[in-house]
Image (cartoon, rainbow, N blue to C red; front, side, top):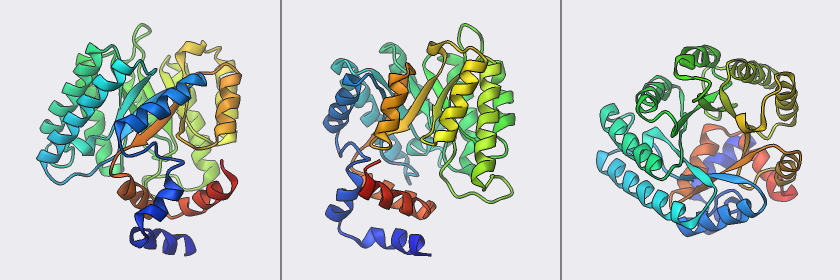
Length: 303
């Protein structure tokens, strides 16, 4: 109840105060901030994926503006020599307003990524978005097989089957590239696992299915048991180091991130930035009040 109370009062706290807590986990409010954060991580042997904050828009004009902002970002970052790629949220381009318009916007972004020999990851959002997002990915992947990937969430009961259904898109030469995370949105028990150990078990089952079928997984977690389990699967299936990567959030568990890099694994950090950082932070806490205690711990114990 305390977590819920804190999360609900955050929108009424002055932004400057909230920023003092958020700045460790968000690169800043403009592309220069994102590039600076990316350079610092690249210098430590870490790749990045950059995300402009914003989602669940209300008009297609907003979708057009978001596309333009991403196009500008791609050109700027590629000219900066950053070792990274990009993450996008489909609702930022109108997924829930007009699926065809969303597809056209995302297609243009991935086409631009191909021109720059880079890559775009389509993020997964809450459960009403899963089917249209997978459909969107299929369409774009068919045309640009090397330049687009998808995110799947292990706490959804459908995910193992979703992986199986996507196998037709994967080959030895061009394997599917799937980020596997636990999932952040609060979903009903009918469609989502709820218990910690249950979610972890299915995460590793999903990951093993990926390794068995030659998929390139991006193992997105800060959970030590999952990292250990992933390494055991990598060793079990003798997976080459260029056929998987670990991913973490900007500013979270930096010591653990460093340890993974020192052990020779590829690491990529998700870098969010943009003027919508306040709404992003407060929405996430409203959706999952349990995060409050983790954030409070992070504030005092610095990862």
